[in-house]
Length: 234
Length: 355
Figure 1 (tube, rainbow over the protein chains, first blue to last red):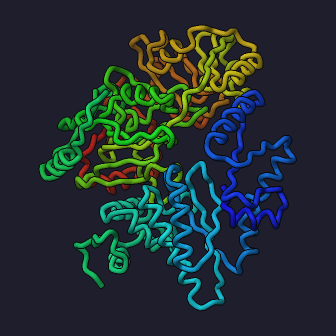
Figure 2 (cartoon, rainbow over the protein chains, first blue to last red):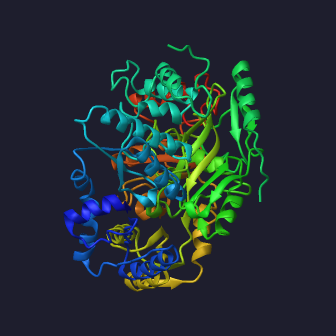
Figure 3 (cartoon, one colour):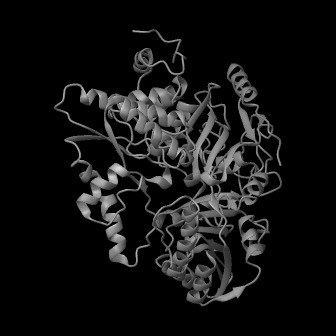
């Protein structure tokens, strides 16, 4: 799925004939034998017609199928035309929450004065908000990181995860403290220790220490509850 | 429908008590899979009291249920919405529970074509060997935050923790299924199954036994009709009964007292020169063998083609029933066991003697 901002940016780039007035475009690819695909196309058409779709196009051949996808595949570079920098995140949510979360993301964007384009794997509920910013403007990168963190926390709040496919290295490590409780994080450390007892492999990445979470928790009090109350604050 | 019973606090207390008393636990449901794995001693911790569907939203294709929920109840709740467990788990008896299917890691005939039980698990709640209730994964389709403990627990035979709740991806029941039959030799069957695997056919199960190859195709009505024409086999009308008998081991092949081995090999491996009676499934990847051949000879043969052999039913359950691991791999298993269950309380020795 691509939202209006992403659609306009890619249409300028690839000229695939997208409807640039639509709030969002949904791509739906079907595979199987020709007979199966024929059956499935009919079912998908019916579902979309009953779901408020304003315009539907079925690719007539392989060339047109490629053209439809060209915008989606060029979406990230196209976003680069909208702003000098962008920051991509990867929260994943239950699919029924897509509408609510997209609305909240737009609100957060307004609150922080940043434009956010959305290009994502709708079938998996795997969002890829692209937060557009200009790293040369003082404070913009910091605001970008902060709104990114808010979006990830929103993903956890609606029953999802902070990362669907990109993983956690250093960047999203504080949000691990939002998604997991202390005993779970301790279990991850014990599991890592089973494979890497000397902690030689990427120490400090992927799973935060409890003290890091305590520091982070001191800044972000979730729903009025202090995280890890038994740990000493620094 | 099973009762909605949440006893996770009692289960945590039971584990904490076992920790205090250093008393091993034998995790159990309806004991339909008690035949599987090594014999293991311990006080029985019955999970059947922890049951019920916690959440199920057909439009999300996700179901979350407690470990003691009978598989039959789960499957009928899904069927009422036109959905199913894609890995087609065998029950192996009345009252089989979800927890048992997950802990044993059993998948049925659809496994090579739809995915294994592990592929369908999205998240789990687990009580570790400290009596802490932990939650891993989730209810969403993709999730790479933290190590994948839910899927690690699949097939661990309860040795890493008490699985109390599981979230799974589910699939729509195919609009149509049909089974076609062919007469041929085992080596021809293996060849044909592998050739078909390279074609866009809606295959959903394959089984070869005693000169007959059965192939099931599932999908849309037109897709299945077209596949029947492509396959050119003899259409049978008792497909559902046949696949049920293969899945549940009611098929005549499984009904004698010899030891039953489950041999896992690369799918295209030609028939193995081991004396006994064979039934081949999963496009050649899963082969059942009834034999009196000594286990070391058999395992050497299977290893030489890159496979492994499990003594599935019968035989000596105090020896190693799962394929022995190389020492370094085994030490990783032991480290993992220590990380989850340092006192070796959960099903000690059920998977390997020293785990």
